Image (cartoon, rainbow, N blue to C red; front, side, top):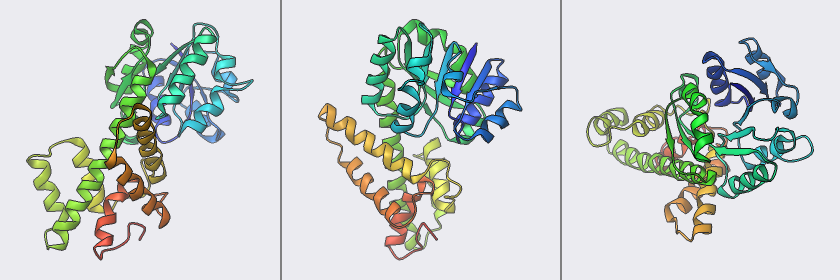
Length: 296
């Protein structure tokens, strides 16, 4: 399959490389040309414009936020204007439910197809093709995309025929991850100040009731204070919590924990930690209890 890939950041570079490894033809675009050149060395075709990347059967976007996705999707030379009829735009970015609805309508009006397929997993999972893909869209189109999803992930979950459903699931999942990070950080700060080694405590947790990847991965980052380089930044974490709050407001679902998490991320950003991994909010409680700041 010929795939245009837009966005070669921490996640996108690994995803695009795995599409090449699986035998797909990839035409890649990124604002930073050096990242395109690096993928071209592995066999990709370089695209110098968004429109160049849209001469494919499928165009995938993996970008930071709503603003970035809108910038490449709309306008005279954007995806909607450049993609041929019946071609497919697959958005793997974590975007708002509202933007997913707007993209669905725009592509439908242009005679194109749109599928939301955000992913769960950090950059190391993207590089290893071990992501979990959450897909939603027309059933036939999603089925035809199975070889694409198999190339980037270990399992695909289809959650509906409306693309927005996948974005709602992704936003809710990131909200849950942030909740785990915050609660783990509070519990670890409590036992550490009482003289219990944080690493030993984490080993107990993950060997008993909390044997799950999210506890092992993020608990390890907090225990080691391993916040740089960021796999996913605190700035991005704040963005995703805001997306959850936005979705909750639209659906009239109160999310009091999300409101708390927004303030925790704001605290981290206000003290210079926006560039840190989002797991750094798990170090705020220890700092507030007299320990070191996450930024030191």
